[in-house]
Image 1 (cartoon, rainbow, N blue to C red):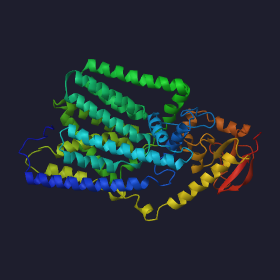
Image 2: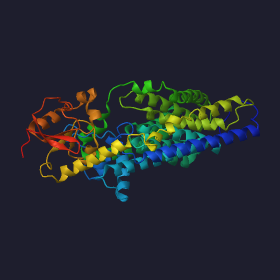
Image 3: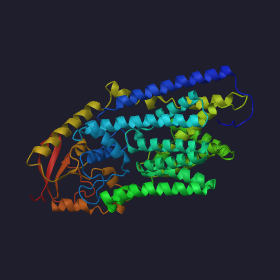
Image 4: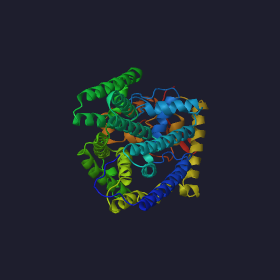
Length: 503
């Protein structure tokens, strides 16, 4: 159970009853409205709901079609897959089992979004269990699990982040459980927590956070034998996994995709986004969490001390990694699940005769009732969203892809689109430089040899250039390419053939 931060008499039973009832009401509102929006979001034909969702779907399609997931980003078709493979393998396998058609990208979008929702729900459930492990009563644990589920940003709805967060929270839950028991059972649980941390890292590179938390706690508490076990298990699991990846795809390909490609440089956009009303509650929560971590670390309860290390490292890691270009508030969710669990434990603890600490904690939870967050899908439901335009764009892409597959005049050669488009997901393997958001970065130009695009145009390997609007400059090369011969407009696409093409 959680020790109180201050001595005193427990609050009255009637006040507890009010707290419990309010927590249940808020939980139901948050879960119901969030589920409504998330379920409505699943079939939307948007290419990217937020973030580069297309990049993840493109990778899923690659793997489900039986083509290598990781290839050389410097060689045609110049694909980049920035994430570790676990999400692609797991979701892609589930897609195969349920007969998802990889030639129909919206089926893959739907698969990824359903799995993301499931992972998010399990993440919230694990937050509930962490809170209970810390001593929270069920109603306060439910409240903060609902807050967590509702607050999850869209960048973690259908991306590897969703599975990474689940593995991280399970890693922390098992770690805290290991601290609550003794002997051989504790050692076994700690080894299991290490394996779960490895699975997080094999889902997203930042998943190493869980391994870092366990190692830091054992280091700070000078438990050398357990630290050696932790390092050995982690090295064995990750070493084997990385070795298999390098053997299967090639060490150079793995290094370029999973190491070089994530060197996106520093951008303060995510930090700037926090200066908004929606994130004020999160920052207050973080501040309280730091104070609680300081108090708990000074105590003697192993689980509370472990939570203190985990929370501070998660918060620091979130802010550090969010300096990277392309980051999002999703980078703070590891700290959020831990902070929420801590607040749930405090909310149901006896903090003294005064009621204001409980009122303040409840008010903080209620402040996360942000209507624009869980009703964001309402405009589309009422017919004011972009669904119709996107459906039309999707249908035209499907028709154009069919021509690229069946028309003898279009069957051969790579295809370069001047901007992101549904068509790229239909012609995976032929579409060149699909991850445009990555290739245009100055860091990519500095870290990769991108001359393969220019060479592909000059030598004619890139046969077709496709535009929605005629006259658009080509990515990375501008107008420095052989003449392009217009061969017509089909399904809203302007098709050009590279004059350097030789059958």
